[in-house]
Length: 85
View 1 (cartoon, helix red, strand yellow):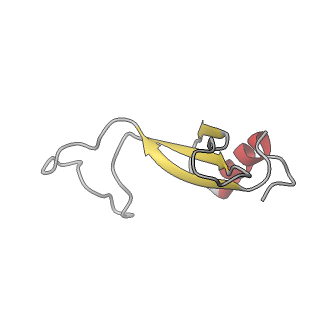
View 2 (cartoon, rainbow, N blue to C red; view 1 turned 90 degrees about the horizontal axis):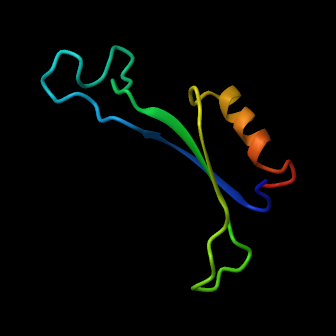
């Protein structure tokens, strides 16, 4: 479990979108990217010592079903201590 100060971010991993000019390329009606990439949530524990050369903190990543608050909360509860910030 990660503890202390934890940074959380998300990214998409996987196959690139179709080439420009194809009927399914670009963005859809809701302005969301038309890709087959999986949403991933990354969590990084900041090290307590910030001296140059100090090893970085622990890292966790999890593929999530979507980037909704509910999906994020499930991952956070499983990977991060409740006292972390």
